[in-house]
Image (cartoon, rainbow, N blue to C red; front, side, top):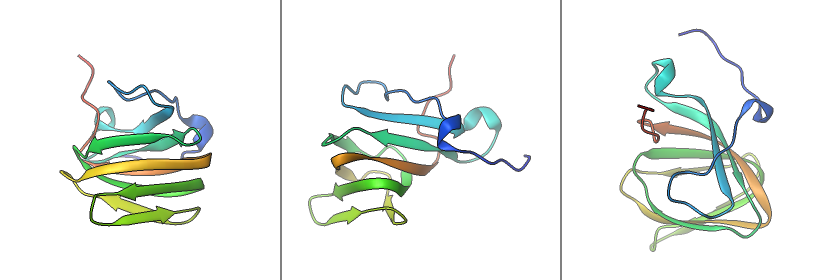
Length: 116
């Protein structure tokens, strides 16, 4: 696999299936490229809340804004330059704050199913 460089402007953002909140993901490298992980950017509108059982291991690097994640036992808030790691099977609540957020993410395995 060749070396890649990505910017937020390279991402085509879309909602995850079944979601209606103002949270979007833009994969830049995924199963279509033959690698074991998905890499992309996330965009969160202001004051959005998503409750999710993690289907994959997900590592988010916060680039702009703040994200708070709670698993019912622990709550963490991260801002620019900080990382939040969630494990497959975790039941989490992800919340953006008043200015929204932009993240970079890496998931293992791929979070999105291949198109038929």
